[in-house]
Length: 504
Image (cartoon, rainbow, N blue to C red; front, top):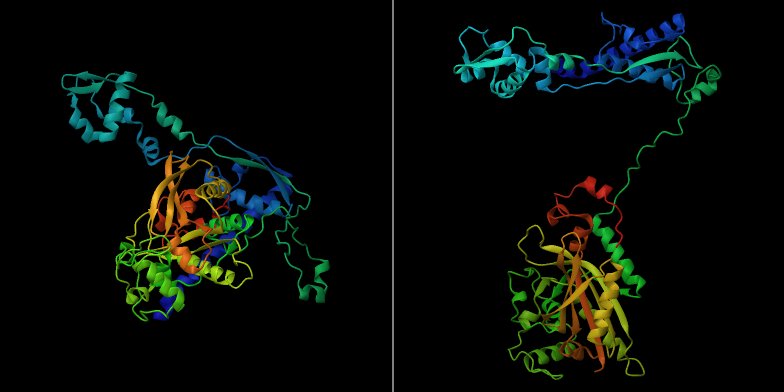
């Protein structure tokens, strides 16, 4: 029994498909036979579709005939001309008007003749419905069809002409005039679409009719991958850095120690950013391998006792805090490691050893944030550093203007700010023409001597540093107002595939 029941849904669609094919072939054959007898089919509304008793005068019937005509046209067996006339598609209200009359006509029909008992407003609503009573009453008064008598209404005329109903009933559609084509035949055998090995072997291809290639037809869309909008913006920013002569830093270490993420940057060990509510700490393993011992001692000393013109933080140094493993909260941890290597490499050269450098990175960082429309626990940071002798704050501002101008942001403002590892520090704002307000786009500053001197840089070397988020420019560029629709399970794959290339 189960097998029999399971087979029914499979057979029905196949049977319906075969029936549909047979009906289409019969209709095509009818059109060809009519042309063979009369040479021209002047009006397809005169045809009787096989299986129907009345002529094909309805809109749906002409759509069916159009499908048959296009099939024959593709084989150049016929040509046809289209005759367009006004066509209306009725709403449910329109269907009701055609069937029962307009609102005002129904109001008129529900009322008694003059001399009869007037029909009150509530009784009228019950008779024709609230909508018809509301709309039809005013129109019937305006047309002079009804009159008020006492507390009710009566007919003012004995007969009316409901033009609204009549006009809606006059629904017409398209129809066609059909002529013989250059390949006219009364046979509807379909032309071959492929040249097969069997046809070549038997020689049947010589007598076969082949369907012509349509070189104007659109090809099947290529099923390929698509870059996410964030990756498009990332590549554009990366191109700007490379164009300006920067070298990309390796940033594959998502897990860092407290030393490289905070201590090497002269962030105090009691800073709020190092607390559990802001940083993700690892539980297994929980501690890192020790950094270079001499450098570690210099960093610990400047934190606890000061040096290089600084009094330090004057707080006890915690080796446990420094060796904790965590998910990096900024890519500046990678920048600190690269600057340390740059200083160490310079110390081995014949002169004082320093060589200018321009470095950048674009990678993911992690913070224990409360997620909302503009914040995630994981996001991307764009960071750049420039190391050279005798750099000034004016150099930093000038570079920022050049960099952001290449991103299409020409109207900038800089506001003094505080960062533990840069002094002076600046917040960067850009004018957003769509929002019509100033929007913070990044942070910047000059790395402190307490950070650079323990690394081994000469005293006259200065380092510019700045960072921006990657998600915010992407949201602005693509008009996204909720970051959770840009990344994560709510991301639209269709939007990713159709998003345009980014151009700053």
